[in-house]
Length: 298
Image (cartoon, rainbow, N blue to C red; front, side, top):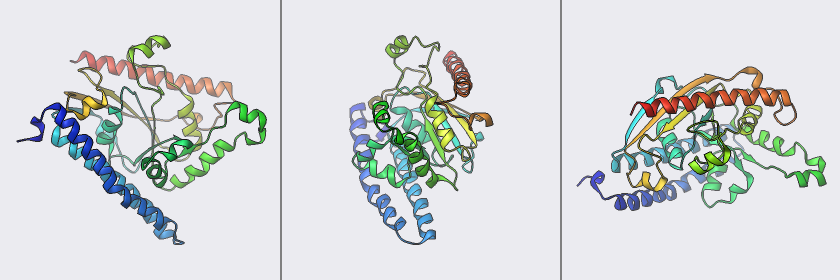
């Protein structure tokens, strides 16, 4: 009997179990690369980073194979021919559910450099995953509150410098940095509360993308603009694992990043901030139109 013919509840249990097993099995191999990196040998240190990424990409490949074996989901992917694993990208995407992350991993794995995203410093304590993110050189951010800066003004700028120092580990090799510009998952309630000007999107938050560009100004070559559409309705993560997502459409566009948007200070320069926000808002207006066009094709 084919695994694709299993009841949805059985698929959910099987995929959940395999996802955990895949993580637990590969984690020790990933963590072992951290010990090699500690050795006083630059060649071995460099190789250990490559091995860590290879293990992470294997983790994604295993997950993809698991889903392919159990799901009848039809994928329609547009624009793959634009991707180059030797280029570095700032990846932006709309965000509807945790399913988006697995979709991005399935579509982009080994087609672009391994994808990382900025994380709050506190997330390093998440069991297994926190250590994995650290080994894989995910950039952690330590942001000081306004109250802390008021008491200790000498800390101003140190949070960004800490992130810059962390990002130096990514220099010298192609990299993809991901940012969900909406900052949270789309829901009709959030859409109404925001009074969003977009039909299918929440308002984008520009600060995170600006931060990524300012920290990695000389490392990011292009904008990787990805739009994910579930034409049969939003796909919750558990529904996705259970094989209840009939079709997923992914539209990929590779765009230039204007040079002048790499060099300003979003927090202290109002003119630069307005220019950056206008750029992001135009991207979002185009993305909203793309979603409307895809849905009209049903």
